[in-house]
Image (tube, rainbow, N blue to C red; front, side, top):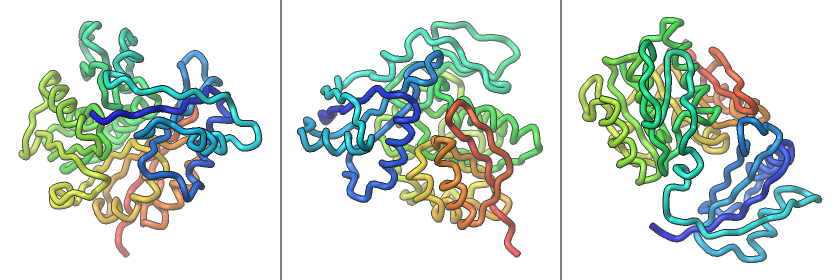
Length: 301
């Protein structure tokens, strides 16, 4: 695994949200730098961190570029080399199970609870253990889709991470074709291990999951298996806006799109992009500062 470093700031919520919005408007942001921002803990909703991952030791100029996201009052920035290990594992060991709709997501430290759709998702190097508000919100929205009579025969989970949302969709629509994708190659092993642990069949047949590594929809198999009457994307607001035309191609008229990973302050921009691409809002859910959107592709006139 290649070395990487971080530049980190711990700031109030409003400062973090402003920095995330400034990042979206920064035309000269290096494409290989990854920026994330989120709550530091569920019981401290006003305390956030903003962290930038970059593939080299940060220079003074790099830190100035990050500091510029915070305007005239830049916070204290710290830099560190990323230990090539389970950075998510360390932060999520011992977390209590989460419950969203009929789903219960737990680590192996906890026992199964009868009467739930139970998933064991260990902490790992992939995003999507169920403990972030966006993942939990997507689980709740999938359950709402099912309750409102949505029929799914072919689904895809873009940016799948651990595979959890694809597993949940298959639990609700067990005869569907299912495809999961992620840009990070580490997710292949993570998803396959989690699928086996949860009794999710792997393969290309109906009721089974196919995993691919792809940047957005840029994969021949991913495109060939469409169109999808349910497409899930829990990623980030910027990529969601960029992917709107590709998702419109992949989802037929009447099809469903579940989007997450966007702050509530970014929702208007995301919804505008998908309105232009031919989608309309079916339902929305807000979890903390995060919006979860269920969109439907408008029928052709």
